[in-house]
Length: 407
Image (tube, rainbow, N blue to C red; front, side, top):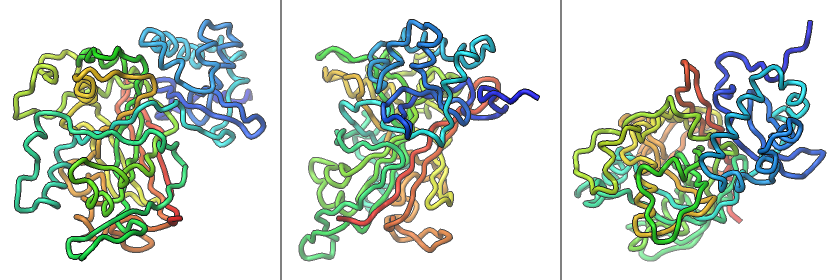
């Protein structure tokens, strides 16, 4: 009986040929970094396959980073994806393609792009409402501007790390309301934020805003993102300029980027908006739904604690991009922006421990004990899937990180 090909992905595999996310890998025998495309439980060395097939895309795919492909623009993204789909589905290509498939457990995955700038948003009404109720119990849960613009902050691009990288517990100043003076030391309220990230491919010109309808011309794909947060450091420092050291110590991202084209079946309309939007943010007349029906799962030490629904996000990625550039700020290849914490209306859909434990009031039960915030040794894993074509599921690459003691 002939041996089954790695390209014969089992039916129902969320990483079948309908998905084909991009990453960057190396092997133990050769440290050179290469672009890989995930198919089932294997990674296709995309550059080597392109060269073997005499493809005109061998130059773009034979790089140590996704940045050249990102910069090539939407037409190239579409054409390369079509070529890759043919390579892994057409039996005639198997003799050239199969020698360049490696098992996932035989490769090391790296940050797949060189990060330019990093912006993080605050786009879930459920999350923002919960946070407002926690910190302003006698006031309005949402700030007056929240439903008029996507609130965000600029983060630290140099501390974005790939899934699997340990996260060192940060130290900083903190001051509880009852403390007479601030103290310095390791954070005692280390938290997660389950998010979705977006990576920019084609840049834009300084001084020219990017319109809502240009989202897919500039954004290459999406991935899972964990915006680690030291809540005690953040609470003391963020007035009046916003998050700084409480966020900048680490942001974990998946090793796999799912191209937007793989998520056509997951497009959904965002929640109904009860405030009129200014024209540059108004997507009411769009024929292309701006939301994505992504189903996230948050696990701590292998135990599921939450299932945040991305479809409930109030602000879309297209609106965030439009707002980010409306003042004329330019985009660069490799810009990353995060959605903000994904939370749903139910308790088991909250995307942060701040909400799940109501700022430490209500501990959650894990097999190895109770938690209010993260302890040293805890491992947090985010996974997700989205509806795909013909009833399939599109898997998003997981993002995981383990907390180690402060230094």
